Length: 623
Image (cartoon, rainbow, N blue to C red):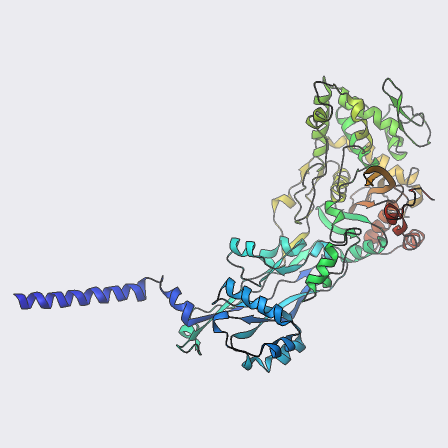
């Protein structure tokens, strides 16, 4: 019996050991990763990042080869640091710092020591790599920008930071990621999927070949190609016209919301942010606090919209039935209001005026009258303001538009809550006259160029717009995102748009932009002059006014809607109006007949105007 028990114990123990070994080696993989950490080297094969094309198939962004010097800290053997640094043209201190950082990140995971070698550097180092055990060269690609005219739209790529690595396990130290523009917004499509190779190591840390004959290796999957909505010929022309000026141009296709041009001035050359010189170049751009080339004025700059905003107040007045197109309003060089006879000034024109000539002549008195009636229709100014705001916001003003570029600002449309705080209501009451600057797009109202272009598209469409967007197709397949394909409807009935559009048409035929007509194209527009203030030595100082212009064309079945802001550009027709007319002609006809306007813009600079806050020269309008 004892002998049988001994055999039973031996057999049972053997079965338990066999079962445990089966579980650890076959069924349970938790210890496999620990073994792999020590016996398997993982090498990543980086995919080609997707290319970017414009709406006409022109290549905008492609790839160029690049080589990174990698290190696996635990495999590092003593080496000649002076020779290594000499080959790579780096300092010994920088090398030591990089190696220390790599070891802290992970002694087993590869880290970049020197990124983005040139072909010549790579060829020279490759011959000597046998001397530097623990280092190896990894091939990847950098961006190659084929255009200098859309840096703000396309964006750039750079190394991931630690916070992102912790948040997204896909990225490793030294990986590249889209930082701005299309590169950032569509990173998940552009980046592709990394391939993985696993190399078996022996106990002497020597490579033995593919782990399990490459069974677990994967090939890289290249990123998807993107087609954006930009017309790069139009974009380049806009950038040319904005030379020596500051501001933004946004042109949209009203029937789709596609962004045809998105120009910010000044800008920068995208190749400055590619390769090993990216960091010092980026620092220079960031510290240029005067021109601010990294600031996208088309998406982020919030300006008073000025007189183009009068078109919205005209539409709201018609919708609220506080005025019709026949009623005329007198103008005595301005609008007088309040017990003290305060005056909202206006320029010289015939009087009285009804709505259509009121728009074409940009009469402040007419729109002050309309605005007051809109607000005073309701029992309290608070109710009137909030109802007015609802109409304004239906045109995409005062909110983030939801466009597919990562940068943007909401602008501002004031509410009753805002004015209650300003005037400390109910301690002090306020009335419509206290907010009268809203009538002419000044005061508290702020808008970005893309918002004004979108507003213009909504007018051109007679009451609806499509969310502005930059993406047209992904890997050749048109977008199906409802946010960009379903129209947004304004609060204004369709029939009210025709008189406002006629007024905008007469701006060109007999109004404030009559000198900017383009033969054969029916353009509808609105000039604007926006007051411009800044602080100089702690004092609020009025600078030279901004030049503002909105337009669409043709009058029927419009193909383009545009907004132009030129900082310190004096008045609407002087700079912004000329630019808008030329951009419209370029888009519709593909060539320019108004060479007089073009020559004027190319030979006039505003650089002296921008220097005045620093030079102490007076802000004086010089014709």
